[in-house]
Image 1 (cartoon, one colour):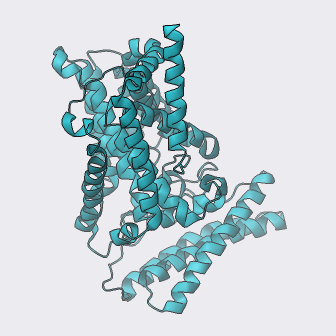
Image 2: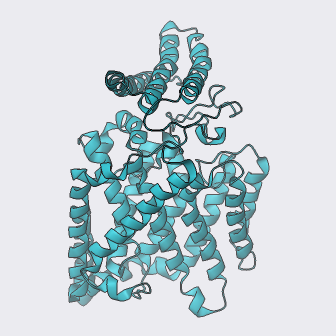
Image 3: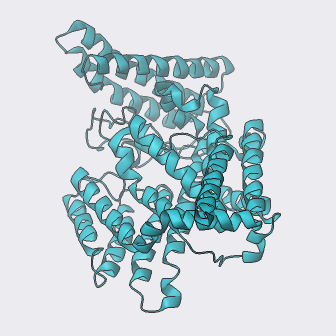
Length: 486
């Protein structure tokens, strides 16, 4: 009877958590850089745009209410009952959690070895064949305690090697998770129990920071998400685009924050995130599943973690007032670091002309149709993107604008000419129009970045909105015909 009551209480708590988190619109969590065009050095939207956005504050208040309610329950006898119920449900996994984590780490590196041509993640392309083989060796090393530290060193080493091709700011997106996995592999082999007991905490912090950092892109670059929202409108749950994106950013940031809080908050946050990440597999395909495999496995490990200890600022975390204070501190620290480091790397006005490897990191794939095109066409190696000077004070810099327009036209011409050579005139029309429209969108974005005429800027935004929709329609038409879009 007591066991049944415990299980009922646990189920009630989990259902309550699901209802609470459903208040905030969660996206099917996909890494936008894997599926949509982006320029890392472009100037981000000012922080003031987020701080004056009422939907940002609406989402923040809703999540804080959920966190505070969870803490109230956690401090009551019902909180321990729910935690005990979760312990019972996850006990088989908890007993073999290290084996589970190591298997997933190994499987992840085998998968990216099979994909080939990437450093550690789908976003970081490399032509170096040895990188894939190094990742296979990392996978092999995780299955022996003697070689796990070597695998950890390999992970950090590959991140450092990637600095040859990518700016440090770009790679910060992946630093926290890489360090966390490497740290886990080292701590797991430690003979000191005081060090070893922190191995899962290392993973928690790594995933939490990675999610909070990447969520800031929704505030800094909301336009990166527009093509995904147009192509997959169901992601917004029927809400307007500019309502959904900031609230989704709040949800991702705060659920990431929840992973480093008290036991019930972190476990319920992990359960919510697990549902979110799994929901992305269907609309975004195997690239998303492989890319997020490590994060999903660590989230499962957090949900199954039976420990009750709180090591970092325990007094603050146990206080109800610590919840809003902690979220506020995390927002100030992470957002200040993101915008501050961007200015430090690229200057106040940003830098449009990135090293080519950052502009064209994606070869074409049906699973990420919006991937940036290389200058030479579909999947061409990035070998001739010009560098551009920056602009200041909102005034156009002719050299930079000219170079950007030229680059946009270069990207457009080859796939457009290839498309119109299709023997089927209907297919030729669509395959030619997709890069033509994309060229118009690229030119419109350059106008928004460099132009100052109000009428032209309004026209440019209208072009982006309308032609993005039309590209999505044409891609769907080609997909139904079994064709491949440029």
